[in-house]
Image (cartoon, rainbow, N blue to C red; front, side, top):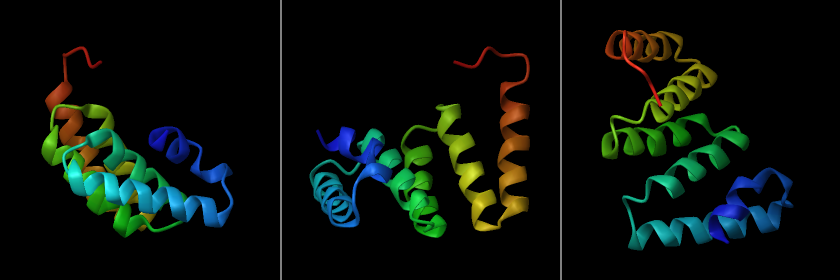
Length: 105
């Protein structure tokens, strides 16, 4: 239920959205390495326009699971939205170097 609420967070009214957000924060206290919830928190923050806070969550995600290319791309996208173009380009360039000639799932 928690994940479903956050995925559809942009459809909730402000009060429901804040409640789902608090619920996710409380979930993370017990499971701080739950990358699925961390990613959804970052997406929720990004929807609200809070890119810097979303970056913090995504940095935690890539630290926990550095092999997940999708999360690195998500982090680069969020950096770009926050105005950190060079940082975004650096991540994408490094991803290209790391995955060159490899099949990425």
